[in-house]
Image 1 (cartoon, rainbow, N blue to C red):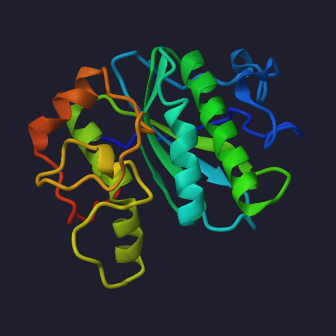
Image 2 (spheres, one colour; image 1 turned 90 degrees about the horizontal axis):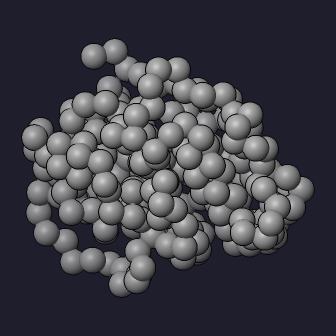
Image 3 (tube, rainbow, N blue to C red; image 1 turned 135 degrees about the vertical axis):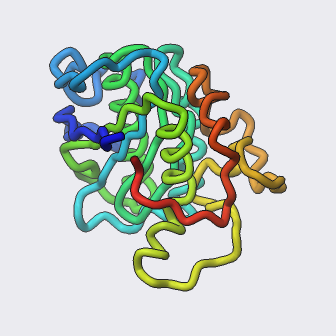
Length: 231
């Protein structure tokens, strides 16, 4: 199946107030989602999505332990929004991968603006800086089949291993990336002692059949895998 990855022109440029104002403060973070470009093709409520958010050049590495903890606390308050759910994520040096569920393109745009706002504020708080954090665009891959979902889960949760392998680095023993939601994932092919007792967790339970059940048709995920290109 051809890779279905789209670059959406949702304007993610932060307002000057991003980094200090709460999402629920009465001011919208970013433009009205009605003005965002819709994804080509159908975004059905039964299709989860893989989204990649990039930060601007010059931002310190997002894989700082302090920033990851800050994001966990922030995502715990926003991962379940009714019509939008953050189900999994991994934090890389200059981008964040997320697997989300949304009931419509508009709900996806609104939910991603909230996640982007929280990422921007966490970065500015942690690194004691001001100004824009996010790049202007994010990538979207609508996941329509069990195999696509299985590939996306491995790609997101094991993305750090993928980057190391591409650089020719020695891979560590199979383990859960602490800068990901892997500690809250029930689809590993072995048991792990949770490294976090966060309650509530920073991710929501999936509701779509594809993300909760369907992908398992293609096998549980090994933490020692090195995912290839997502397709």
